[in-house]
Length: 322
Image: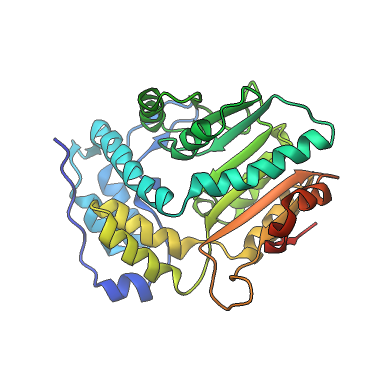
């Protein structure tokens, strides 16, 4: 029986307008790995203390209610919780058409690769795939054998759930527990949705630097657009569409942690040096309204201009960075 922890005490206006000094997401703290890759036990009190030290009493209250044995979080409970949270997150992916948005970018990108001398087959690898919604959507949409879709995540419980869902849906894709940047069969295109904001400071730089050794010819990363309105929109969506306290907490924090286009631009250009990069404009064309998502695209040197040509009128959405 899955029992949801109760939320901690903090008024809604505080959660939205007075974010804690250290923005954290609970799901980032519940799963740890040893240096050899095996799963490490997680002490509940340590996670609670981490939340308190970062000024997030809401998160601390949620974690304090989670079941533990001798002070250690129950790993089976954590696995069930992680899968449940990611299944709720799928509602967000469906609402904002993450699969269709990615497909709209992959079509001109793969056409550019073929046009510029890189023939199929193409391997599209989703970094931090979770339960694999985007990979499953793309696999159902694209049935050509020239394109292979692979989801990669470091959490075995999420990968198992993704495999089960793919088998249920009858789609042609696969999921692996692995480092997406060090695959035996490297990606042609690396993609992600809602992943970049999890990396902060030097970790964000290392994320982009890893593209250098991945063997990929391009990447497409989608994430939340940083804006003052984003936390309000996130609260409304998660309050009405999500049931789990962890999902509601992390949904708001995700919006608050979103990187501005300047941060992503600087990190990508300084660390993914082999790639020509472009980033979507932060506001809706001809209006001051912020876009919901930021799109960051990188292609190996020499492919940027052909990609802009393949994008057609959609190229107006992007600012080339290098």
